[in-house]
Length: 464
Image (tube, rainbow, N blue to C red; front, top):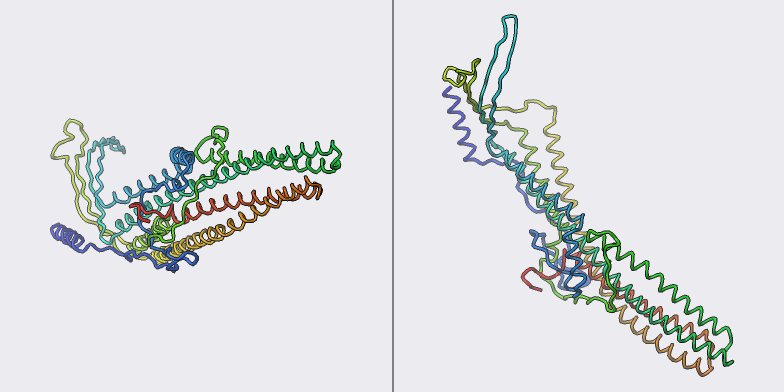
């Protein structure tokens, strides 16, 4: 008995002193990304960092109604609640993995009867047991490492769902505000066309113009009224989408009309080097690489023996009266080594599977990073082009309005027929609607850029 005890003590001491952990230690994989963005100098890329607290990036649009809707989304969005519950589940798994580092104690109380030709025997037993599988090769520690990385990935995915839902709500809200502007424009245009129709009818009664001019003015008015009615269902669709995002039924949310578009955020020329550090999908992909790396170590420990220290003791007797007494006492203690001697390549297969999963996660991480760069590049070039396009469109609108004014004067002077007036009116209206659509696209592109950057370009310290 003494040599076994000495061996156990020696083994335990060597384990504590060595702290052996199998498998590769984690190193963040390299990612081939550009040092700066092509379309905007000064925008640089950095490695993903730990998740920081969320910033209210939507405040850049300076819209109180939008801010209130985002608060409702944070409180009631169902996709966000599901992601938060998934994170709590992943966090609980960390505790489950860590528990394997500690001894396991059990208790047992029972009674049994056994019978044969000799009669019936009764046995009462109370026992306590203690077992501890020592983490010699770091299997449990690697499992804890993997579960912690998975929990961090789940937290990043939760942040990603939040950013995605916020971005979707802001884009829907901005499009709704563009429709409000379209409604304002068409309402004013309908009134102008009604005045033109009345003027044309008066001129027809006076014998100055033909009936065709009245028909053209009426056609122009009715077409515009139809376009105005079409905006009602378009606005309702965006309003319903906003309601669902804030966790309400479509008829429970009404967004009042306003006559101005939200403020377009100013695009900075330079940003900190930590550009994509807060992007949740990159952080999640990198944590999944870490988890896959730890799983390689878990698989490699199967090649080595497990050492379990166990002890048990208690009382066993046939009579309850003298059940708990020294003669009925029993105990056992000792170490146990166990390992697989032959498995026809099963352990090697599991290691290869773990290594393949790691390679998959590395590829997904690099692809996620490349996709993030592409999304930022797309948003940057779109914003740059839109800024130039809006300037040109404003000039086109001014020219069309000037043409309309001159054509109306010529019509009143009898120099042109009403067809020229309706043509100039159509061009002027389409020019202004095109400008509004461009402004709406510009606002949407700014949201997409903020989302591509992981929630804005402002740092938590206020640095820009």
